[in-house]
Length: 217
Ligand code: SF4
Image 1: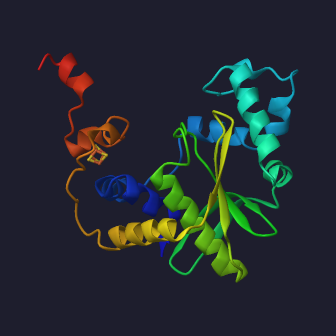
Image 2: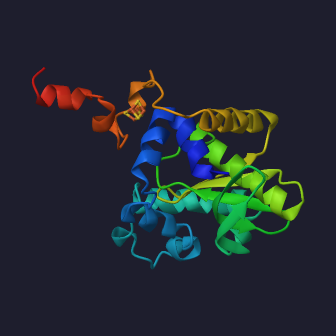
Image 3: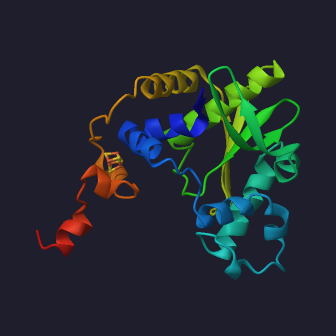
């Protein structure tokens, strides 16, 4: 049984998953937890009387309320997203397990909360794979189809609703195979833009441009 996050990390970089397993510590940093906690305070954060200068948002207060306000107007299950049936729910599916940060009840839908920045449209592929893993586990537990899932970016006030498509399930299966076949350090990825924010740059032997310039190489 693999973790939802194993599949997400393998989608980002299989070598990063190898280092994560070797490291053993999966506790999210405090800053990540602080941002995720915002996803449980949306109505309060929308109130004009709430001081947003002391909360970890990544855009201006005006932009933040505008983003959240449009999510509230657009999403048909807003009231469940702000007051979900289940929070930080452990889900165990046939092949993977992990935490859905929120679960909506009827019809069942999982929510994954990202502390990062959203893409212009949709969600990043590792988050799509993680949400799909949560959706499959939820469907397995409830013995009911799960057709929709959500990824929230609370530092930006952005919420994305996703359908569980054939393409997303194929990406999930591909990630699962990558995790299953991991028995030594895989090659470094070619997309070096992913290495810049990676915690394992030094272990991996990646010298980023900024480090190279600091070393005058
Ligand atoms: S530094 Fe790059 S290649 Fe190495 S583990 Fe991180 S993302 Fe993968």
